[in-house]
Length: 558
Image (cartoon, rainbow, N blue to C red):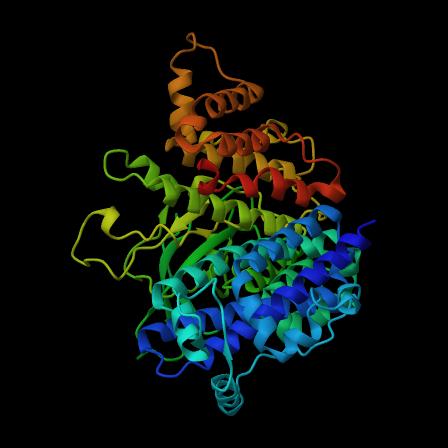
């Protein structure tokens, strides 16, 4: 079905990687490279390593047998990157032996081959780079399209090409397109039956290229979804006491005390809870086997997801608090965040109307982070079940003025995290038909899941909740505020039905979002709220990517 397009993807990758490999050697062979540019060089080095590992995994794991729409997206990204490197390919054709030997644009035999004929490795040895630099000095060429001088030596061309601002723009554009590849990585696994094999997933979990590309955590999550009881890791933390408020429901700060070393200072950690027992006053309720299995499964999920680009916090471990009939899930603070302040939720930020309002690019970034995180978890076979603006959190920045009392000077908007995983589970697992009548929670629930639920929780229910959050971000009002404003217009004694709440959100999205966030964002939100147009199960993740993820983009406003 997609064999021809798969070959096109491999061909585009080969041409791109040969050019990028040449540019990498060019950049790292430059003498007298100023220290202020060293960070840029290292950023580019990481992007090349990512591209290298992605290509290797794509070929080794039969990624080119994926669904056609996915292949088309990858091909388009490779082509954009290739065009971005276009001038350098001309130079590589004149100067680089690997490009001259293996370029599919120069040789028909490599263009029709589905294998990689050249070495993936990029030079890291200083002697190898130095040898390349010395060889380059001996060569001269004429490039009228680049320089006003009819003849320019290699070194002067190289420095003109990588003048600081030019190189910054080059690296930034490169990162922009490789970031899109990273969004597509979990989709690759969801769309290819090759990744339903436990042995394949086990290999990916430990593979160096898999870890570099970001496939390893997705392989772990997928493995857990397929065989939930497989992970036998003991996540419980021994010889500690948690000093935390019993009434806390959301992510909060607690003191972790080491009971075996009383002289040690308490350590601040982040904590979430999973409660068991329907009656909090019944002291005889104990954690049953099913609860323990779900707790272990959730700990495995959080351990695999944390710090791996899934916008989740780094998982620390578990504590069973029998006196509170709950399990405490402990997390580390994000790097460079303050451990003195309680994390701030998106809901809290939106509630401070007169104090704070995110800029348009900031709102798009938060929305993008939310949809890519949910898309990845769904692709890996999991559902979150508690998506709300309360479950998207930010942390105070330690780079601002520590004496400032305003939220705006403390919150780093770019670093948002998805929290509140209390009820997360594999989609294929048995659902719990529980409910409550908490209005703020009800507003994020799909009409099918309001009141006593009659259907199992599915991805579509998560996506509805995500749509409500995206609506909140777009109009910068909480769902509760939107509901209350509409409820005031109803006659006394009249309440809004679940479908009525859904219709209210859809109507607000259609009417207000084009002005605030643009028509593409509006379309994505309406899709989430209505849950239509995502197709059959096998095409779901790709359709969600095309209809929602790609439309949450500030560039669509231009």
